[in-house]
Length: 332
Ligand code: PEP
Ligand code: MN
Image (tube, rainbow, N blue to C red):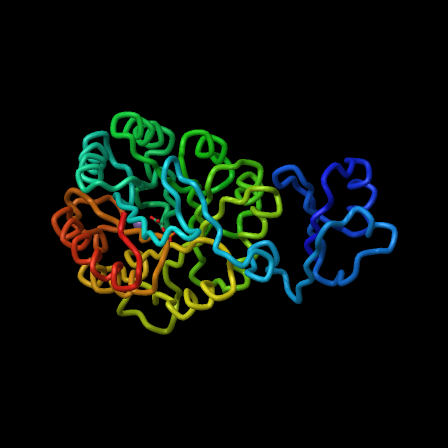
């Protein structure tokens, strides 16, 4: 159950009741919000007097549910908005990994030259093998920060685990939680304590409910700025890297109140399929599209096969504009 308390209810009343109700609580504007287990269906008699409004749920998708907030939430990333009623698809570009100052500056110049706002690059890479490039870590984060200052771009980078979450929260405009890290309680709880936007990628074996529950960890700590990102599931098929779950996206659009970003690059795994998949994504009326692009994909230190070269990326942006406009959206 979600319970909005009346304004001015004291902290001691909240403490007194959140114990027996087993409720998490946080402040939303000037009022306190309590979220209980879903088994709670009724407000205890003595507590009723403090309650302004309440919502009952049959499963653990509560704060992220459209039964609570009907309209899609709007999240501010610097001076742009994602989600809400903006009807804009933000194209987020950049390389899989920050590799050197020259490479990330080239990428930043390119993103800026297209009139886009957001540069993404990984610094703490969650690699499957310990022998592959693991990312530049803090040095990479400082390079992204420099690009933000030089080009006025918003930056997104991912947290691999909780050991470096604080520096990412400090320096990144959006904290990306990767597909392998989305169950990491240390990361989720740290992200719940900040107001920075958090982009949660769906694990490749994660149900839609578990995906939304990861968002609930952040939302129930009081951070309302959560964005979901579908990036492909593992299926029986091995010819493509993963299988992009567009059915799942339709389900999220119907039931969940968070902005949705799609990542066809990691789903497909091969550059040749990314442009057509990207068009299918944009045709669904989505809030963001994440595409990996590298100045020279052939020498990329991670995900080389799926990154678009700059020429292909620029051409794709032009091809996406009429697709977006056909569904009442614009690419920004
Ligand atoms: C990435 O975004 O570069 C990445 C590693 O993605 P995912 O977490 O979806 O595998
Ligand atoms: Mn990648």
